[in-house]
Length: 497
Image 1 (tube, rainbow, N blue to C red):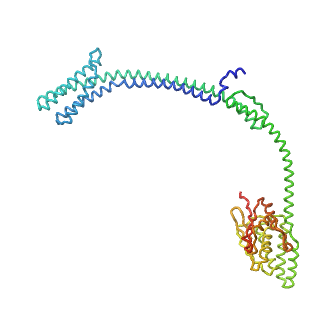
Image 2: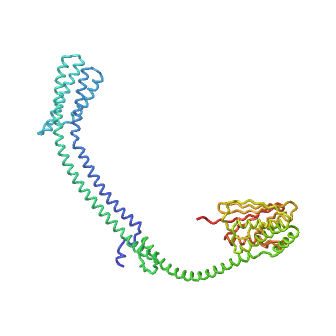
Image 3: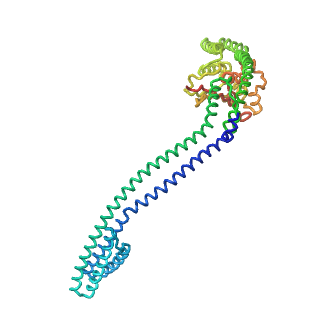
């Protein structure tokens, strides 16, 4: 405990630790770079000064040569441009000569500087006399003086070349010494940079250690928890940085998770037993509902139909009676066979055709029935006895009691995710209130119940919802009394794949 309180880093936040580390490293590197930059600049200035004397002598030689060229050009052309250039270069040459040493000392280089300056002054004097003689058109004089000036020009150039060679050799020795010192400086600088980097690394490692050690312990505990081990013991900490706060919260979280797991386990065991009972009851209930709904067929329809067949047998020959009885047999055979609940859409359409045929026999062909079927409806599954009750309602509640010619139009269309079935008539129509009653199952049953199959719209709606597990699969629309009615059934298609 004494060591923890003594360490001031434990009281700092991670942000403060990192900022302090980067600040110390930055200050150290800045000071070192400033020292190296100053030393390198000093060395570069010394290197620039090594061959500065050679460069000045080359400029002096070029200026002297240009002056001689101007004198020669003026003697040949006597142009004002060459004379102007001569005076300008002469002044430049005199300024350069002023920079040469004029004191005689016991040094070959200094003696040559004095000789170059004196010989150059003599050359300029003869050059001026040559130009003046040329301007005065004294041909004999400017020829003689020009020869002397040219000879002095050659002496000066030779002296400059010799002095340049002496200085180049001396500067080369100095350059070698400076390069050797630069190499030594490079080694020293590299050593300083390495030492600074090591110091910075040590400071950084010291700071990181105070952060990573608690994080490593916390990460190990978190991995144990992630593996499902909630029985680990993680010591709490008095550190005030972000890691200490997280570690303290983690210890409290582990304790809370243990309590929650124990309570959740007990609750889930109870809930699982209840769900098993509810699922079993729901399965039995749905099975009973399907069987009950499919069994609601009024026997009066069967008796009335058979009576009509008997009367037809007495009035007509046996062929029509045979067809009628066959249609009746197919219709009831389908109903009995599909008592299990599932049917193909094509089978439902065939049952509707048989039903309409039976009704037309009974009512002397008063029902005009048309249909338009999309050929792409194969493998469409739905509950049995769904379409026939809708067509039956269209007959009994739609067109039976109208004075005009009644018709029923059946349309089946394949959509992207469903098959849309439409049964439309031109009969009595319905009000919106009546539509709401029918869809909610509150519509009363009329006298026609004894002359129907007994399967109402609410029965169809319930079986569709139970079969597909969706609502609002059946809709009814009408423009009002006398405007006909349309019933639309949406049959969802199973998702592919």
